[in-house]
Image 1 (spheres, rainbow, N blue to C red):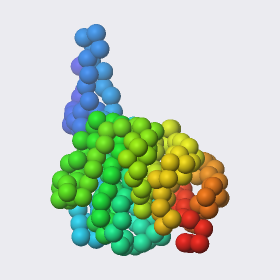
Image 2 (cartoon, rainbow, N blue to C red):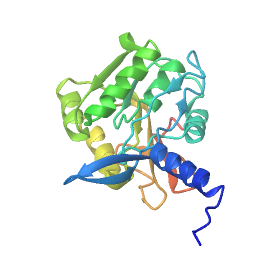
Image 3 (cartoon, one colour):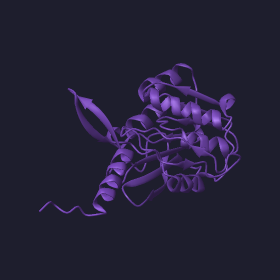
Image 4 (cartoon, one colour):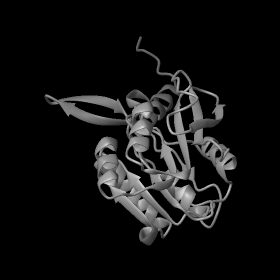
Length: 231
């Protein structure tokens, strides 16, 4: 007696295979097929300002961790919510979401830095979609090289966003370098996004003090620094 086939089994397996192919990419290693999970592209948007609601592309990589819309909105509610001009430094640009949000809310100019080619490509595309080419500068450099370049050029910034990949956080070093090289004005606001397990000092030299601190669901924390007397 032959085996009886379940009438819905073929459809079920077909559906499972379709889902597998949609969420995984097939690669060949020594002629044998292997499936690896695709990196899903998160949907981010400009929260407020002249480009409110505009969709931003993100970088499909495990090395980048774009700031979520919820965290971004909270950050700008704490420091703004709208900016009266000024120059922005987005030191770990990723997709450029923080710098673009600042431009949308009134900043004059933004400098985006990221060492990854893919990230700079996505930042450029997002900047173009928001029509901020004439108000933006995109540099493919690592953070240390970028800060050294800014020092040589005697530049300073009014808003600094530090959102490094969690696995490679050097926030203390970055802030200390900016203070040492005089890259911050007396009115500068520094926003650092980091793991909630990372301990940042309440105070840096030259009167830079932690003004606000927030934690969010998951492992995200935000520390906002300003110079004493400007809180």
